[in-house]
Length: 408
Image 1: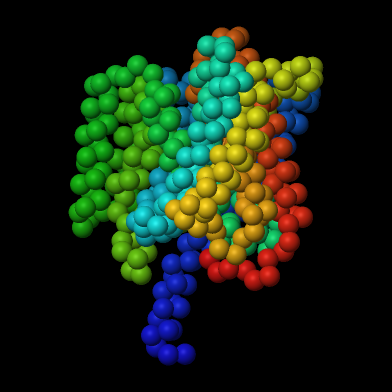
Image 2: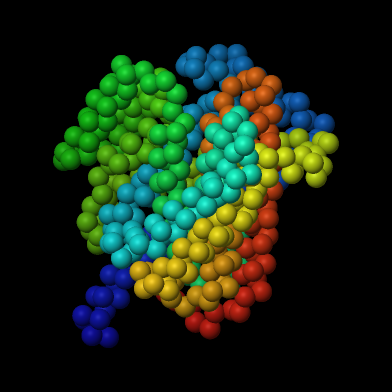
């Protein structure tokens, strides 16, 4: 092999390595998440149901932060900040040197993700928007669960072309950016400007650290914890601290030695994939199915969420891909048939982790009505995600196996 061609091949291999590793990691984590969701449902509908809810919602005997008085709050406002930090690292890496680094690469994922958020929200509002108490839930079906969707892809093996898996991954990453913006803008309570100013000062210190020659993981960890504490008390949701902190971590040029960002992502991703997210799923997915009938599933809130996920995602994403391809704005993923693309868009309707998280923010409080609305939202999330997972699996399972796998 000529030296020039060999160098190009090596460069492509280096570029594709993070994508391959992420796909493999998400597939395994998604399969674990499927098992966790089933375990949560079993626990919530078994003789240990009372204990299950008590583990997460009963006040802790002692907590160093009074604002986080239960294990559920520590998971949702504390551990999930680490999850969002890893998402932030992932997004920054993709934007700087990955699948979102050029305008051409960004076109189709951004358009598809936008359609996959707008149409589900519109369907939800069309079904449930007549009740003012439910309108805050419009963003619940707008989210896609990367790990869960990739887990279903993992079950299908080589029936899903590698470049189509990568497309699913990039759409879900852009979707995550949208979800973070929604959480920051829509689900923010009254702002406490003193705490917010303190958070901005800490963030500025993190940016300065990232530009210095002395940037170290322990420094970002320390400042990140302070940033999280300030944002927790500012009125902005605490998980936004994770994304903000990630943006300050330095990212090296492609082809160089692994940057601090890549090292931190590599170190933390397994912890979030195999501990934080499954723990969040187990703590939040448990919903009692006692007395659940057709009437309950057809109530406006669960029906709006389920229809938004199972139908809205397919219409929004597939429609945007078809229009973009037809108009020449952005070509559909190479080597993938329209049926396979349809199957992938169905998998985007799996909203599990992000949808559950937004559902908790949409209907806050400890009152009977707030709890009931969160439970109804969970029913819609589980139903819509189940239909999307099974539908996407069957479509891709029955689609013709690709004749040649396109390289990642």
